Length: 567
Image (cartoon, rainbow, N blue to C red; front, top):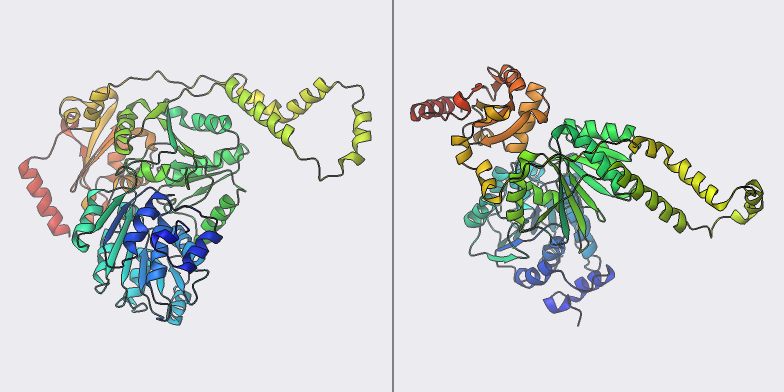
């Protein structure tokens, strides 16, 4: 008996799985499919990206729905267009031998008229991004009254992107569902709240540990001065010939700037960020998927849902502010059982983040020295020699030219020919790295028992960041204003036209935020933001007295009354 058949799948679905070359279910598939086939059990599945989650819920859906009924019976909600299309393509492939099944993807950036037309023709499964789905609901272009099964895929990513209200709206509009299936890589409190509010005694299955990382990923980091990040990035790429990877930045300005620099230096790279049109985005992703591009550089928001096979490396140009985002970044590699490497370029003051991520994903990070110029040249040289030795010459008519080649080089030794080939390929490269600097900084070692303090309460009481070159600023914007750390960071940098290197720690609260800015630029940031309006409310930014002053009770009451008037 086929192993997939033993899970309870019907003959047509087993045939489609076999046609794809799958012989054994993954851990999440093995545990989830028998539960989901009941159709009446609420379910929470915790597993990393790339572990086969789409098949884990897609195959049971195809078995449960009725092909004869031409209305939406299953709804899959996911964070991004790319993931939406990926899920649709995968489930369509699984339905190869199941007649009459129609799956429709609805997402922003494409014609809503065409999507409405396809829905009216009759579909059983709808795969949707939250924004476009709500648009269709409000236009009364989609009927969710007969939806029996709702799947929330990458739930933690949707919440990170600010879709909590949208998820609530969707679940409130699928009142006749028989079961809700939630899949997530991590289990933050917000995801737990959804399971509490909208599920009844859900069956919870965890593949690996909660919030853990993929065991096939090697986590590495470099400690370097902030001003050397770009040069270290370039050296890491050069030291890993054959790399096929994604580089993550915090802001779209960084993504574009680094892409332009590397492109001018001859690297096959393009940026993916929010300023691209959908057509431009599709073009970039198409080139990356067919490996015309060696590297893709992206912001976290732009890279949501990217599912590309064979990515060997993920590089964090900087660590994310929200540490759980690290799990999603690293999850772009080591998919479908393959191995991968996640490299982070860090400053000494980010060591507490490394320690926190280690605890979160239950994995150790390995500190590496930045390769020297000679190390890079040696690695590139032998990679080129291996390629030269492996070149297939069987298909060309090279023997026709061989007599001329022999005659041309009859007075040149084999050793000299090889030297000339190497010089032709490497002269410019060797010149660049000939007198390359040592980019390894002197690490400030932070004991593990002190790393928590750097992000915890004690440092706010006893550690004055002015002594470390930073001024702590107070601003009356917080998570209640719809910000999370990444979006807040981009907002203040865009408004002040400053580079992220001037920032230190960001301490976000519901009603306000404390931001560390180097002393030379603190005044500029205050001038850029103080007095401006955000959502019809005046922004107040000023220097916190002593670096860490908190509002008094009276001050907090005053802020609360101001906010009530503003809303």
